[in-house]
Each structure stands twice: as structure tokens, then as C-alpha cells.
Length: 370
Ligand SMILES: NC(=O)c1ccc[n+]([C@@H]2O[C@H](COP(=O)([O-])OP(=O)(O)OC[C@H]3O[C@@H](n4cnc5c(N)ncnc54)[C@H](O)[C@@H]3O)[C@@H](O)[C@H]2O)c1
Ligand SMILES: [Zn+2]
Image 1 (cartoon, rainbow, N blue to C red):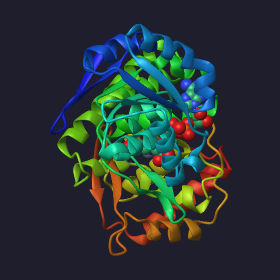
Image 2: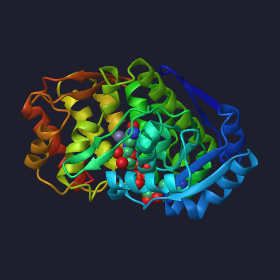
Image 3: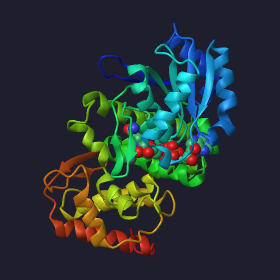
Image 4: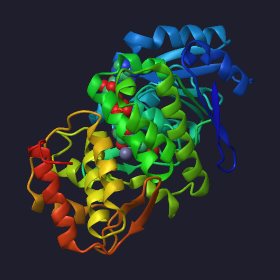
């Protein structure tokens, strides 16, 4: 078992990582929240079918009076009306401020449940039990909650830190292959920005990781969570340092919006974004050629990425419209070596355009040398 403290004010909490943890979740939460009795497990159909019985049995064994509350599956239900419907269900079931919300699912369930927990009765306790790679290495840590508006993703949200994050890598065994790989790119991202050992191991053992070897996954998730914990503790509300977590996300977001969130999963867009940022860094002479190609090769080792079917001009347009763009200045997180990045705001437009064009070529003709 690995226990990683997330040191945020006023109340730190732990992320606990262990294969088979689901079966002990009830006891584990009993120790963390000894006075509480009732909990509401927010989840979606695929998890209800595959894993809920195990979680509910474990909660009962830990003395919890647990109730399952289902929401519809998918990013399009990450909207305010879902919060309202879930709130109605909670109040019909007699939930009060002493009840605990358990978010049991991927990042969508985590973000929705987090917002629900921060609003219902002006705030109740939340526990994250993430079930996708993306949620285990990233979304469940750090307290960001949110829903989407028509105008964009995550535009309404709060900061609401959970009381605990329980991570069982075994639940990843039922995750669709593409979702699984997509989450791995966020772990690789953690390697590039601050964990060279994580990067190296992912580089060397991509086969074992893709086979979902339990020990590999446990280690990889723990290292990623450590990185996120360090960054979040230093910068809980996204002042400065937390920006480094956006490595690969500047162009990644532009790709997601330019393709209307249809052809690329988030992690896949980030994967392309990491390759682009690395090329920009190389072009600006901020990283040596050998390290740059190691990053690109490592990304490409996790399988074929969907091609980018939009024009470079459209990608650049989206880049400039990004909500994180201040006064038209686009910030890039660029790698300077493996395990180190810097935030750069004065990248010449032609360098960005060059990287985007290379990306399109690479995506359409994978025989091109990485
Ligand atoms: N709060 C944060 O800091 C943060 C960070 C990154 C991403 N996010 C958010 O996370 C969301 C994406 O999360 P995601 O990639 O986990 O997607 P998701 O929650 O939509 O899950 C992907 C799919 O996998 C299914 N699934 C989940 N776990 C499964 C399992 N163990 N077995 C079988 N199927 C399973 C889900 O039902 C869903 O269909 C986005 O909305 C994004 O904005 C939040
Ligand atoms: Zn991301």
C-alpha cells in the first residue's frame, strides 16, 4: 500500500494506492471518517455493472449505510442540470451535511460529484474513488470541480478538496483500451515535467504497462500522484507553479476544440500537444535533440494516435481564443530536459505554426521519422 499525503490547507488528506483496495474501501473510510454513518456513491452504469457490488459490500462491511446514486454516463452530462437532478435525489433520500459523497468513476463523475459536494447544503464531505487512469493520476487529486457550459469546458466550478482519494489500479482491468492508453499520456506528462525516473520506466516498459501489469500500474500511478501532490501543495489555487501541469495542454486544448471534442480523447490531444511543445522547445534551442526525440518516441510508443484532421490555421485560431490566453499571449510549457519544464510566453508565431504543421504531417504519415 502506498499512502501519499496531499498537503493542502486547512486540511491535508491522503491518496491511498493499492491493488484490491476496493474490497477494503469501507474499512479504510471508517478510519478516516470515524463519526460518519451515511454515504452516497455517485456513479455511472458501466461501473455499477462491473464494480459497484464489490464497493457496496465493502462499505457495508465498514459499517456504512451506503446508497448508490446513478448519473448518465458521458462528458455531455457534465452540466449544471445534472447537479440539480443529483441534488434532488440526495434530498429525497434524506442526505444531510453529515452524509459523505463518494465519487466512483472517471473524471466526469469526479468533477460532477465534487461540485455537488461543494454545493449541497453549502458543502459536504467528499471521497474520490477514481476508476480511469486519467482520474487516478490526475483528476481526483487537487480539488478542482466543475461542469461545462455551451461556451466551453469547466467554466463553472469550485475548489473542494476531498477527505481521501482511494485508488485501486485493479478497476482499470475493465477500462476500454483507448481510454486506458489515453490516461497513460498524462502519466508520461508527469514524467517529463518532474519525474525523470517515471519517464524512464514508462519509456522502457511500455509493453508491460500496456498489458496492465498490476505492479507497473501501481508504481506509475503513485509517481504521478506524487508529482501532482507536490505541485498542488505548492500552488493550491493555480497561481503559478500549477501551470506546469499544462505541459502538452496548450496545443492539446486547441486540437480538442478545433475537432469539437469528437475525434480525440483528452489524453490523445495532450499526447499530440506534448510532441508539439517538444518540437517548439527543440526549435528554440531550449532542449537538446536527443532528449526531444526521446520524448516524442516515448509518446508514440503507447500506440497509434488518431490523425489530426483540421487545418493548421484553425488550430492556431483556437490557440489564440483559449480562455487561458491572456492579452493574446499564448503561454507554452516547454521541456528543457527530461524532468524539467519552463513556462515561456514569447514563442514566435512562425515557430508555433511550424510545429503544428509538423504535427499534422506526422499524424497523417506515421512513417515520418519521430
Ligand atoms: N478536476 C481535475 O483536476 C481534472 C483534471 C483532468 C481532467 N478532468 C476532467 O475529467 C474528465 C475526463 O475524465 P475521464 O477521462 O476519466 O473520462 P470519463 O469519466 O468520461 O470516463 C471515460 C469512460 O470510461 C468509463 N469507465 C470509467 N471507469 C471505468 C472502468 N474502471 N471500467 C470500465 N469503464 C470505465 C466511463 O463510464 C466512461 O464511459 C473531463 O471532463 C475533464 O475535464 C478533471
Ligand atoms: Zn489533462
